[in-house]
Length: 220
Ligand SMILES: [Zn+2]
Image (cartoon, rainbow, N blue to C red):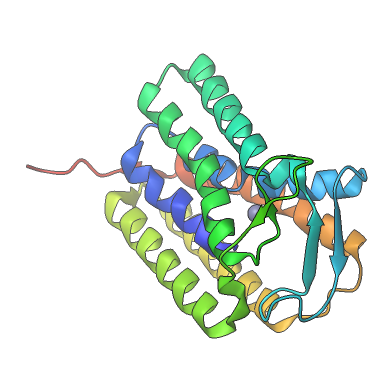
C-alpha cells in the first residue's frame, strides 16, 4: 500500500490537530521508511518477481525487523513515547502510535501471506488484496479519497503556499501511485531501495504543508 497509508496520515490530523502533518506522515509511513534503509544495508531482503501478486512485482521474503507484528508494536511504542517525551501531547502520542500500527494492518490486508508475526518464527499472514489490481485500486483509492476529504474539511490554507504545497503533494502522490501500478518490472532491488529512501522527502514536505495551513475550529 502507498496512498492508503497517506490516507491515515491525512485523516489523523482531525484526531490530533496539534500534531504536525509531517509527524503524522512519519508515523503512518514509519516502517516503510525504515524498510529501504534496511534493504540498503543488507539487514532485510526482497526479490523482484513480476507476478508475485497481481499488484506487486516483489517477493517480500525477508523483512522481519520493519514488518513483523511484534517489531511493529515495538516501533509503535517507541515512536509514541518519543513524541510524548518531546511534546507532552498525550492525544497526539496515542494517534501517532496508532498510526505506526495502522501501517501493519493495511499491509496485512494488501499482502499475500508474507508478513511475519514474530521475527524468526515461521508464521506469515496476509489477506492478499493485491491478488486483484482492480480491488486494490478501488479500496486504496477510496481510503485515500476519504482521508483527503477529512483533511481538507478540517484544515484551511493560511496563504498561497498552504494551497500550493498541499495540492502539489497530493498530485505527486497520485502520480507516483499510478507509476507503481504501471511499472511491474522494477530494474533492481537497489533502485527500489533508493526510490524508497527518496520517500523520506515527504516528511519535510508535509511539515512544510502543516506550517502553511491551520486547523479549522468546528462551530458547535
Ligand atoms: Zn509497508
